[in-house]
Amino acid sequence: MAQSTALCQARRRLAHQLTQVQRRGFAVSPRCSKATAADTASYLLENFAEKSVVRRQFIDGNQLQKLLLTLGQTSIEGADVSENPPVAGTPVPQGYHLAYFTPNGTENELGPDGTDRTFNASAPFTRRMWAGGKMTWPAPSSGALLRVGDEIEERTRLLSATAKKSRSAGEMVLVEVEKEFWGPNGLALVDKRSWVFRPEIDPASAPAPPKPLENITRGPSSVKDIPSFPTQELRWSPAGLFRFSALTFNGHMIHYNEDWTRNVESHAGLVVHGPLNLINLLNYWKNVHGNGQGPSSITYRAMAPLYAGQTYQIRTADVRDTDNGKVWDVLVERDGVVCMKSEILGHN
Image 1 (cartoon, rainbow, N blue to C red):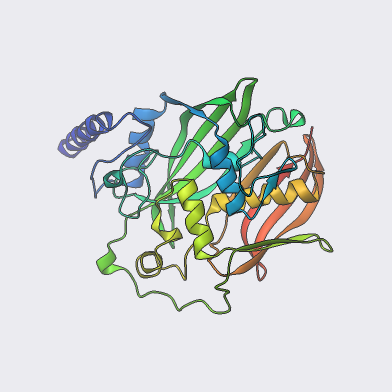
Image 2: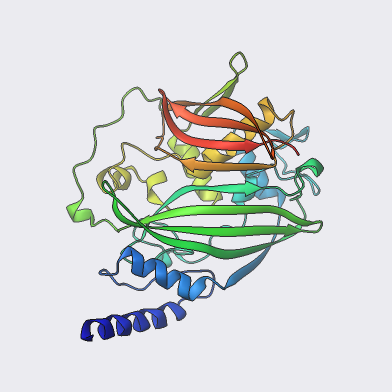
């Protein structure tokens, strides 16, 4: 009975701390190194499940121009953007909204690995990984509803927080968030995201770093189509990853700090962003299967990391008919290893 009372008191204290955090989002920052994954998931649900965060942002052409150039694209809708940004009314390609509604906060509010604390689980589960999600466009036949010059409203809510455990990674927390983007013509996009939060690493006790990567290219990033298969071949340089991090205001050090990513996170090199691969999946499908038009939805899941300097491919593994329409299974893979898989629903 005493143990149960103590646990209840501890939960009440942490719940009070959670309500004192900044109201910019579902930010959670109490230091509670002995909290379990189940405790953390419960606290998130108890404090944030019924809350919604609303933000508004003007879709400016400059941000879209910089993302296009980072992706190696110098035109959109037939207009050159090498020197000047897209004009008002230009549709934002599917997935490119990730360069907007980026995190707020000053540097001293970031986690130990450089990630923002918005939507984060509490300590010790502070190591965030973008695990997957689903994007749905309610009216794809009308084209991209987000356009340069529009004022867009983003509505965010917590969908779920679940404790997980694996033999290799131990305890973790799976957090799912839903974002709706509303424009002048109504709902433009529903973006569901899944993050996995693992326990924070003590740099002093991190394992020995892995061997350096072999057979990598130090040159510039490259995205090129191979029509005969059809396949898309990609390679990202450290500079390309840094520019994408800057555009998405992503401070996660695994994408630009090689000392951290190797010696603390035990990665073999700088990690290619999951959202960057997601954008490339959408571009591949639009160009190969969509006749220049984007899909109705994409469901995706990260499977294995890719690193700067590695060459990898995007290809179609299967096409099948479902009750909702035709679905394409599109993979991101390297040397036969699937690094991200997706199911893409075509036009309804």
